[in-house]
Image (cartoon, rainbow, N blue to C red; front, side):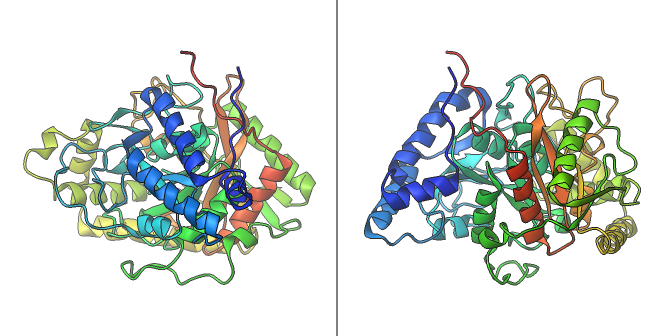
Length: 468
């Protein structure tokens, strides 16, 4: 029997305002869905029903009095277990971090969500230290794709993507150091946005440095824009945070983008793409051209920056893991241990060269965007694959960046990039279209994404509930 369509966060808020639905009812529904589905899918590492219902009751009272404290007051949400959260442990998928210690501080992401009345249901799963593009860890085991539990949801924000896709809450916030919001959003059939670097304040600073971003995840572009308005509020603990933007993203997302110039690069000039994915993405790009976006098929003209990314990624991991207690090397994910060891082989000069390569790529893309307002690509060149593997079995890949080549270049450049659903494969698996804009053009990227949503609406029902 088909499951009922899910309400978006925007629809929930409208229902709260009219009195047709209450935050308590919405929270109970989300908690019931977690209880029903998360045994199979493993999206959460921590759920706190008592706290969630207490938050929901406070929100319900505010709505009853006509005094909501934000545009998303009362909406059930989650956040990845990479963000500090007062009262809840932040273990980052690791067995090596001490659970029994005071957890007294909220990250900027957590603080803004609380201040705007979102109901925090719990924390979602991540691979250890968010190091790879699938979601399994020594702490929490395997997280599974909602469309086929035998397959990966991607990562590293796979728990957040699964939670949103299945209705275990309406919104979530992930981290993205090389595609970790966009990859699982694509694999799970939702919207995932990596805004311009610094748009969402981060604290504490990530050892992965400028690669690190946070990003909203939702089932609609409007919801992503609403959540970004909350998350983008400045925080004094991040010295690299960007100043506030004029206006709001919830308004900017509705701007008319017809007539703007889009570059469509099916392969970036060097990526092998699954033919069915290529066809699905190309069909949506054609719809955009018909809708009034001026599309030109052209590559951005850079080579694969995998080497520079690998230096920055592995040295960041090594720096972080060096702070772990003695004996950690024998307890961490074996793949992460290999990255740790690799990071120690690089010199300061190697690190600076890699940073310079990223900066040069950013300059190149800045010039590219003087000719093209946005760049369109597939989000991931392959469909979801079997769980329990860091790379597709029998695919000839040695590491996760090799199968995620469309995402990590734009962490190096710190550009805004969003994935929106483009359709489903013949086996019923979601495929994503990526939209990339110049730095600081978050509003433009969101507006183009919303146009995609209008001309190519995706299903509003959740992946089918498994048979009992």
